[in-house]
Length: 463
Ligand code: UDX
Ligand code: ADP
Image 1 (tube, rainbow, N blue to C red):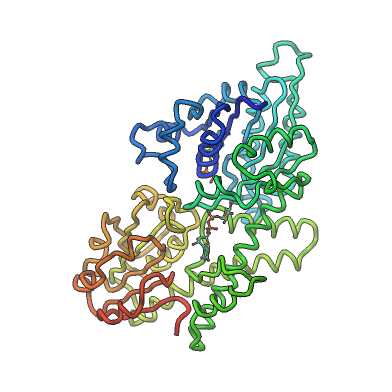
Image 2: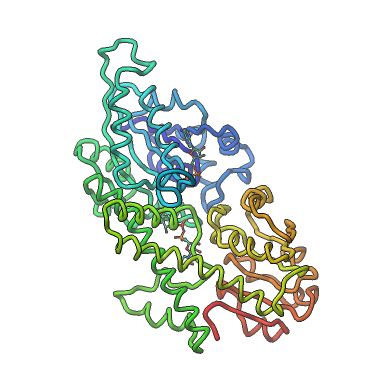
């Protein structure tokens, strides 16, 4: 029986995942630990609006479980010592320098995590990979744990054997719907070689997930499946975005095409919304990992095939930026453009790889003045995301959509926040400079009503 879980990494994956396990397994005590003291402080904040991750439904679970069977702390040693199961949920961004730069994942956080586990673990522990990782990372973790078995500070008696098994249990939650995805998963994937450990992990999920939905595979299949699932999803977005450009040139409408093709059960209607390209911490990183892996094994055609999905994504962002310029008489220098939405999708405060970043960078370099409004993203996040841009233009953070649009030549809708639907667009029109443009990269607002107000309107994938 699993009694104590430790999750290393209190981020967008670790936080919500452990919250849902805590809610469904009141008999299991869960410690979520992190090296980032500010993040832990935010998780422990009495004001639930200050939690570091915004997800619909998360605040309620934190209120219910925190301080009971769910604790957030920086005491990594204690968390590891007490654990029967350790989930690794640390970040694994793409490497910026050195071997594999731009493609491979940087495993330095995984390595330091494995070393911490090696130092502090006691008795037998199941180590679970939760973060998305390159295939064969389990081997790296195993090597570190194997070679450290007798050197831990907890091993007073050198013959006291620490044992562990490694399991891959990738997370498939999508941000913005994380709690629902965790509560009602399409499947739970558990990969490993040790049946006993697999059954222990499976038992945790069986507290709320139908056992039929639990898929058991070997370790490498599990690791690879996670990368491939994300690559397939991202591929659909690049496919539909490539067709959006063709629609704009030919007179077809992208929503009509999406609907028509999505009605075919073999294709399905999900992930066919054309937009400014995919963002988020996973898609690009995982495809680049797949590309790296394929090249490593000499499968160059396979690598090129998947790399094209990322190239089309960037192309879509460049395409949107250039048509904004073209429509604004070829220049945005000293023009004010209001950017609605900075998070990479609605219902999350996560800005990692948001299409807004790339599009804003290009506009700023053209000399535009940008005003940003996003219902959940804080100014400091925008500062961080834009800090490396050397540019002509300025940008300002605004607290309301109206503040952002005051005197602007155009509004760019880059994230599909529900509240944008409720804007009094006719009032907004009145405070903008004319001709006033709306560039709706998500086909989110009814374009006919905008045109009736007097706006010039561009929407993705429409003639
Ligand atoms: C994704 C996977 O969906 C999830 O299973 C995995 O665990 C992590 O990566 P996430 O990145 O959080 O989740 O969100 P997702 O809903 O997949 O959206 C990713 C990006 O694709 C967003 O920028 C979104 O706006 C975009 N998108 C999604 C589209 O442009 N069109 C669509 O039809 C769907
Ligand atoms: P994800 O989206 O995968 O959850 P995040 O960046 O949101 O990624 O969260 C990862 C968390 O892991 C961060 O809060 C980071 O501080 C934490 N972390 C990274 N390395 C370690 C480590 N060795 N020990 C504890 N926490 C770590």
